[in-house]
Length: 410
Image 1: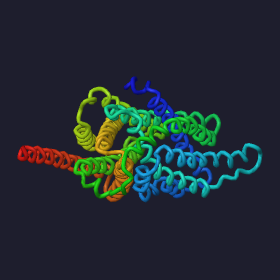
Image 2 (image 1 turned 60 degrees about the vertical axis):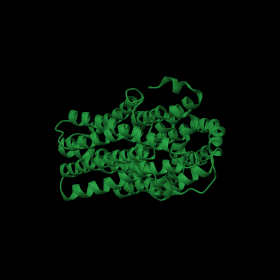
Image 3 (image 1 turned 60 degrees about the horizontal axis):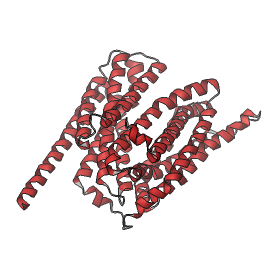
Image 4 (image 1 turned 45 degrees about the horizontal axis):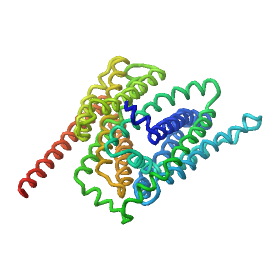
C-alpha cells in the first residue's frame, strides 16, 4: 500500500471513513434481499428492488456530473448522503415496532420506494464523490490515491457481507440496516472537514457552461471510455453468472458460491496493490488495456472450470484484472480532466462501467437462454479481445499521427 498517503490527515480520514461507510452499505445489500423475500416471497419483487436501485443511474448520472462541476462537491455529497442515511433509518424505525410487541409496519413497497430514493441520490452524488479525490491530493499522488480507494472498496466487499452474515445469524437482518445508518456518521464528519478544500478547488475554474460534446471530442478520453465500456459489457457478467457455474456445472452449494465471490474480492484488492508498486510509473492506459486484454483471455477459460478451486483461481485473476483495468483507466481520465469538467468525466466513466455491465448482463443472459453459458462466455471473450485490440491500435495510431504532425511543425 501507500502508507505515506494514508498517514496524511486529509486522505487518511477520508479513506477510513469511506471504508466504514461502504462496509455498512454492503451489510445492508446482504440483508435487504432477505427482507424483501421474507415480506413478499416474490423473486419478481426482489428483481424490482434491485432495478429501482440501479435504474436512476442511467437517467441522472450525467446530470450528476454537471452538478458536480457547477456546485460545491462536498456539499452535494453531504446533502444526498444525508437523504440516503434516512432510508435505512426508516426501515429500523418501522421494524422497531416488532421489537416492542406491535405488528411491524414494514411493507415491501416501502422498501422498494426507499431503494428508488437511494438510487436517485446515488446517481446524483457519485460523480461528485469520484471527483472529490483529486481535490484533496496532489497531482502526483492521484494514481496511488485512486488505487487505495479501489482497495478500500474491495475490502468492504469482503468485510461487509462477512459481518452481515454474523449479525443476521445472531441478531436479525434489521441490525444490518442499523449498522448502515451509523456508518454514515464518521463519513459525514470527514466530508464536512474536507468541504472548504473541495470548495476552493471548484472556485479555481471558470463557471462557463459544460459542453459534453467537447469532452467526448478528446480522442484519448473517448478511447478510454470505450475500453471501460467493453470490459464491463463483455467481462462483467462473470460475477453475475457465477452462480450458474457453481450450481449447474460444478454442483456446488450457496456457501461455495459465497467463497467464489470472496475470491473475486481478494483479486480486487491485489490489483490496486500492483498499481501502487510495480505499475507506479507505468502509463495508466497501457496498464489498463493490457489488463483488459488479459481479462478477455481469462473469460474464455472460466466456463471450462471443472473444480471449485479452478473457478476460485480464475475469479481471483478476474478481480485482479478488473481493478487494474478500471482503476488505471479512471486514473488516466482524471488526469485528463480539469476541475471544470472533472465531475462530468467521472459521470461518463461510471456510466460506461455500470451501464456496460447492466447491458452486458442482459445480452449475456439472452445468449445463455438461446445457447449455453460456455457459448456466451466464449463469444464475450473473443469480442472483448477484439475490442481492446482495436482500442490499443487506435491509441497507438493516434500517437503516431501526433508525433508525425509534431515533426512536420518542426
